[in-house]
Amino acid sequence: MPELPEVEALKDFLTEHLVGRRVVRVLPVAVSVLKTYDPPVTAIEDSEVTAVRRYGKFLGLATGDGLHLVTHLARAGWLQWRDRLPDGPPRPGKGPLALRVALETGEGFDLTEAGTQKRLAVYVVHDPEEVPGLARLGPDPLAPDFDAGRLAALLKDERRQLKGALRDQSLIAGVGNAYSDEILHAAKMSPFKLAASLTPQEVQRLHEALRGTLTEAVERSRGLAAGRLKAEKKSGLRVHGRTGESCPVCGDTIREVSFSDSSLQYCPTCQTGGRPLADRRLSRLLK
Image (tube, rainbow, N blue to C red):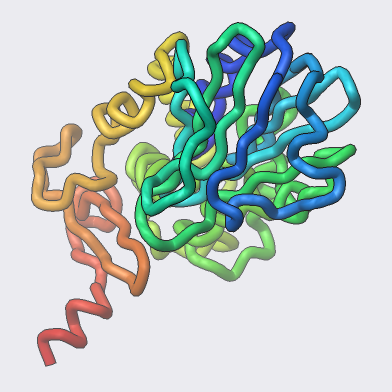
């Protein structure tokens, strides 16, 4: 799933390639991608893109006509830039293409989604706040005013584990499964630690890890073409998706806890005092 750093990089890339250019066609291929119908998605045709913005994991294009095309790439969605779009309209079918945006220059981009769970979402609205998921977003962790005090205020009444709290978009916008693992590894904290139990010193450490991990990932992605962002994300991860490999900090073996639709990775030595966390799904299989 694209998270804050990748969406930030896409925003920068599209700002360079879209702003000041005119949209000539918007072609939905998968009906499931459209979450709004009034105004229709074609309403942004013949309008100029004036800005590209990121809202958490949402990506928004503002047009000179006052409309906004907002998309959430969900778990398996992606944006593919094309220096030259194919001639002729795309054909609906079983492929991953969900929506195409064509510019007057012949360039454009495709929104694609792999797999069978179609969660990629596109909205055309007068105000981005009309998008349901965007309206409930918590603060952006890279905003200048997101200091340790603000993080402490967000966590002080949280009775959830840190892993779940960091992934809650209404608490903090933009962090998903991968970067929550990376942040907790950098902070040397267990994903199962209760958020409200953190001391002021631990909040400060988590804040530094949160800002540092995301800032570093954004810097790694800055200037990359859209097609290279997925590979860059994977190459920069220290623990997420690296079960069985050696921790780059201490050399211990990275462990995993599995859930029904996701998993987390962590280093026992760095994060849990050397103790492996209970994997409930694995435990059930062993009974």
